Structures are given as structure tokens and as C-alpha cells.
Length: 118
Image 1: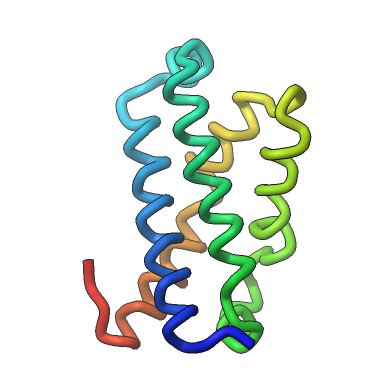
Image 2 (image 1 turned 90 degrees about the vertical axis):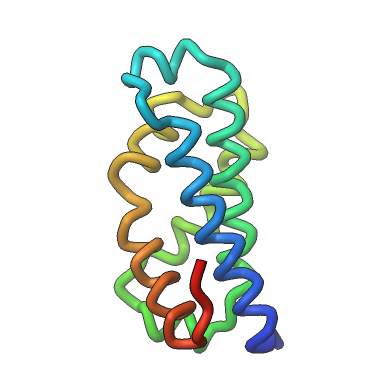
């Protein structure tokens, strides 16, 4: 069973890798991102870490944020690792641009509740 300390570490990994994914795409158009193998692979790796860290969160913590699509958050890592030939730049781009904000807000709220800041 995951401990509070485990949740804390996982939350930090999620937060830091969401910020990394955003940094790797910052200032790029989709076309520039799709053309940059470095940006694509770095962003993909950050999302894999987010996915794995989400898997380590306790069910109680995930239950507190039941509106988040935990199954998809935890499952994207499998897609990225095992379907790497089919991973589309557009899926990674949309994930970073459109889908990480609610997860980041929940993670930061949990960290704030635990008295952990940047």
C-alpha cells in the first residue's frame, strides 16, 4: 500500500515532469515540435514519468480527485512505451497543450495541503 511519503514523491515527480513537458514545447509551433526529434522524445519521456508516478499514487489520493481521468493518465505510459511506432506528434502535443492543466492543479493543491512548495 502506498504511503503518504510515496504520494509526496509521486506528486513531485508529476509536477516536475508536467513543467518539463511544457518547457520542452515552449515557444514551439506544432510544426516545429513535430519536426524536432529532441522536443518530441523529451516530451514523450516526461509524459511517461507522469504516467508512472500517477500509478504509484494511493487510491485515496486519486479518489479525492475523482474527476480526473486516472485510467487514461496511468495508461498513456503504456501507449507511449509499447506503441512507439504509432505515437503521433499530435497526440503528445495535444496532451501537453490541452490536458495537463487539471492534473497539475490537483497535484499542486495536494502538495500545498502537505506544506510542500516548489
